[in-house]
Length: 338
Image (cartoon, rainbow, N blue to C red; front, side):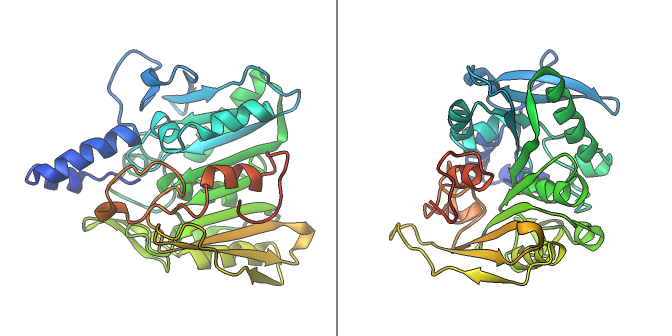
């Protein structure tokens, strides 16, 4: 879910590409300038969430908020971060509003923030991104957002979680390194740690973290290296397995267990292998969902672009369901993919 300026330039000369990128921008949630607060994305088409804003670091920052009809006395809060080029409304569409439906059952709140310039300062030193160019304090903003919601709703501070895809997934991992006092669980999809963030990350005491990554991701390489779309370089990552190993070392895990590959949807071109860290200090739960053949996508979610651009969307698991269960929010929570 990374939209880049070079791709838009190329689209001017390729009508088929322009059409595909227009559809991608719609799903990702490129917004237009209207009266404040105006959230990015498909807000006007989804009246069940509302657009709100707060001032942080001299900026008006917007977010979509879902509040169920019944809020639990000690309510969980899930922060959901969009990919590069996107917005909170687009992230609702990508997950097909699934988190909102699950929040109804749990009495939880779900918030979909908007990044500056449709992106997050995830620490990759991606000089093509406005949030990086302006050194936006997104860690501080997301801390402030949680504090703002805690002032208005009975949020349980021990059940504040964050998830995201691509640029939002990398931001999720940065929060795992820098904001574990606020966030207690992390799920990053189609993402791994940026090289610079990994070099300074000290996630001692990490308790709950999962990565969901495709081995055939054409944008964020499984084995690490340069993040790129259509030749545009957007910083470097260490890869899924190296990220998993870094967090396992921080949790003082003794090893990992790999389940046999699952192939329950024979015609989707992917298989799923769950890697679980074993014997971690304090009982930490760390997982890597290896989606063999999977692309730059939210498994089980909306296909937001063509296969030529993002690869295969796996149907071997529903990342929305799995995130909810992994974070302990589903009443029937159990280990392993649904």
